[in-house]
Each structure stands twice: as C-alpha cells, then as structure tokens.
Image (cartoon, rainbow, N blue to C red; front, side, top):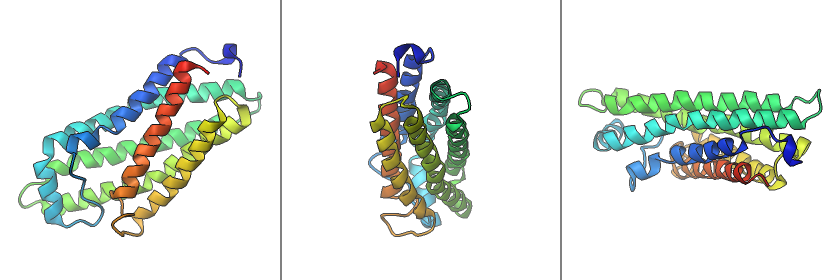
Length: 222
C-alpha cells in the first residue's frame, strides 16, 4: 500500500495499540506471583484471594478498563485504513468495526464485574463474591469469541486490501484459533483450560502481543 494512501494519525494509532496491550496486561504484575481464582473456585478461596490482593487488583483491573480508550483509537484507525484501501463497495471494514466494538464492549462489562468482586470479599458475603467472580471468569472465557471475530475480521480485511503486512493476518488467525480454545473454558473446567486458568491467561498475552505487532507496524509505517 502506498504511503500517501494511509490516513493521518498512524503513529498515534500505533502508540495507542501498544498502550492498549501494556495496560491490558497490567493485572499480571499487580497480583504476581499469585493467580486469580478460576471459575468454580470455592467461596472461601475467592474471598480470601481478593481480600489479600484488594488494592493491587483494583488498580490493575482499573488499568485494564482504561486500556479500552487507546484500544478504541486503534480500532477507529484500522477501520479508516481498511475503508480507504477497499473498493467503494467494500464492506470488510464494517466487520472490523462491529466485531471490535463487540470485543471492547464485552471486555468493559467483564472488567466492571471484576472490579466489584473485592468489595464483596468481606465476612458474610463470601457467597456473593464467589458468584461475581464466577460471572467475571465465565465472561472472560466467552470474551474470547468476540476476540476471535475481531482478529479474523482484521485478517480478512488485510487479505482483501493488503493494507497491513500479511504476517499480521497470519498471526491474527493463530490468535483466533487460540481464542476459540480458550473460550471452551466456560464449558469444561480442567485446571489447564478452566476460565481464569493458564490457557485464558496465555491467550490474553498472545492477543496483547498481536496488538503490539500492529502498533509497531503503524508507528513505523512499513
């Protein structure tokens, strides 16, 4: 794609993509080395975890919600980029926009529920904390389906327009496949697959890495 055909603001969109990735992963160092209680954890373990990690978790999760702001900047730029690169009747950019809005919307609701859990982790409210935690963890696994839709739509738009390097599309397809696997954690709960377990955490890191890759491409404009 020629340089002149890129919409203005590619560097800002690239920096926003990297910021989204870093803020999305802020929860990991905030609560390290412990991990969040997975879907189905006992009320006592949920309450004990969030009581002992209250402030670090609240800050890390808050940063995750804040990540949606630069994420929407990147989404808007990608839509503008694909729309400009397509034929006049092209519509793949609409799939990118709708799937991206769905992804960020579900993520926002999920993180809001997570933000409530520490406030329920007090004596006498253990059952309520467990319910809120399970809702948030199940939503986290199911969030991987909108992530799948978004990464595949970006991959398809790249295939249609060549607006970004092909390896971004290929890595997007790989991310989509991993997201599909992670979404099964809302159905089956072996320790490695359960929502909130290793697979969903790994896919979050992979998804963030994919955003970083997009960000670098936009910043460098290669």
